[in-house]
Amino acid sequence: MESMIRDIKLAPSGHDKIAWVKNFMPVLRQIEEDFSKKKPFAGQRLVMTIHLEAKTAYLALVMKNAGAEVAITGSNPLSTQDDVAAALAEEGINVFAWHGCTDEEYNTFLDKALDIKPTIIIDDGGDLVSMLHTTRRELLPGLLGGSEETTTGVHRLRSLAAKNELEFPMIAANDAYCKYLFDNRYGTGQSTWDGIMRTTNLVIAGKTVVIAGYGWCGKGGAMRAKGLGANVVITEVDPIKAIEAVFDGFRVMPMDEAAKIGDIFLTLTGDKDVIVGRHFADMKGGAILANSGHFDVEINIPELEAQSVSRRTVRNNIEEFRQKDGRKIYLLAEGRLVNLAAGDGHPAEIMDLSFAVQFFSALHILQHHKDMKKDVYLMPDEINERIARIKLASVGVEIDELTAEQRAYLGM
Image (cartoon, rainbow, N blue to C red; front, side, top):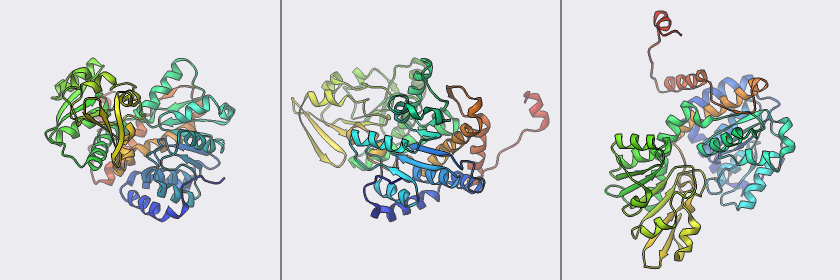
């Protein structure tokens, strides 16, 4: 099968990027060493739809070395790195992606990847699952199951399962301890502000930052904003998360009120229309809008454009929307994931844990699919612990072990 990429000549730079992140992903290196010998995925066909950058590329190579035939696409038009895609194509991976693809091209890439007739999938956001439930249902009989990388995708899976419409077992990799405790909190927190700061070249200290959503991603974004010296405001719809934000020392208020005082707005909810027309009308001139939710629907861009007199790019990944009264509102990275569209995504050490979860999720599907229903599953605790122990060993940390008497006391 031929790949669809921007330019194969870009591969050398991609190889360098993959080699760099591999240095800082000891868990995946251990997995590669163990399973490249056993090749448990021999004869399996894997389709991956994840942000196509160096860390994802290394996971694809680990899966290939464990025996799988791999096809990969990007899960966001602006997060694909063309040199990394080229490097993977040189390594014998079926690659269908390029940076800045249109919606039509994006769907074509998904279709092409599915042409390998996958037995296992790794999805990020749910678009692959959606296509398998609609236009590519002929592939369902050969599919064992898969896993989902992000919160938005898990929401979509659980919605299908609640209606008894999910056609194969899926593991919510996003909900594994070794994923959300680190990836969503520390990964999102660091990479989001990296994307915002490198794009704007503005100071964060002293500004009022409005964080929409106080889930694990929101916690990470708020924690890092506070550390950078911002005055942080949280908006929420969940009363428990809202009181948690209060106890963490943040101001909490409705977006209608926060819109009047915010300098930087960051959405991390996984829902649509978090910031809409009436909020834009109340914002200060110079307000900056960014999103770290999976889809570009959290900030209602059509409404922002409709009430603007002009829209223009003023700096790479920054669009200016001039309002009728002369105020200027700035949107970063087209409202897409700012940490990937305007940055390099999560640090390698963080994705080391997340992608170890994905590897073992795929392995669990392979080994146990016959006993699994068409439902959404959590990662077994023993796999989380296995990943954590490998990671601890890689950083030279030892922990205590329970004695036999302690285990008996705890009923273990």
